[in-house]
Length: 126
Image (cartoon, rainbow, N blue to C red; front, side):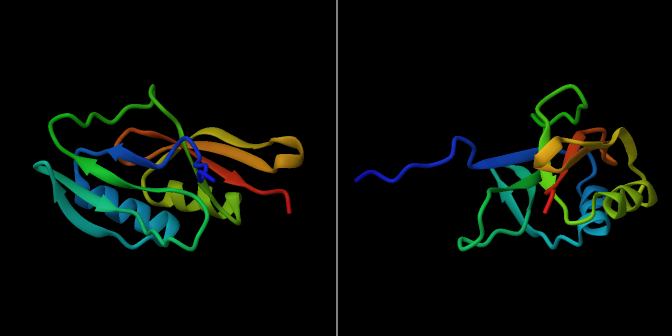
């Protein structure tokens, strides 16, 4: 039997100032990062554990990476969307779409990070 996979397996968030971006995401989500250079691009890898559900990715700095609020939107899970939005503001980001009910699925919100990317949040209803 062939194992089935979800369609998305990895993401990269473009950054201009990788140190500033690491500080922002560490402040908002308490993430720790592993630094790498891949194909001459600076990467700060988000935490990843094989035993956990979901995917991981990296903050990515390089010639081909251009931050934007107009591209793909990535959703980060949070247990407390209100507290996370407060941390976003306190860390230099801004709210683009306020906390909104998504019915039985929970709540969503969107913010602009310190690099100019649109990032979304999801909080489960349970």
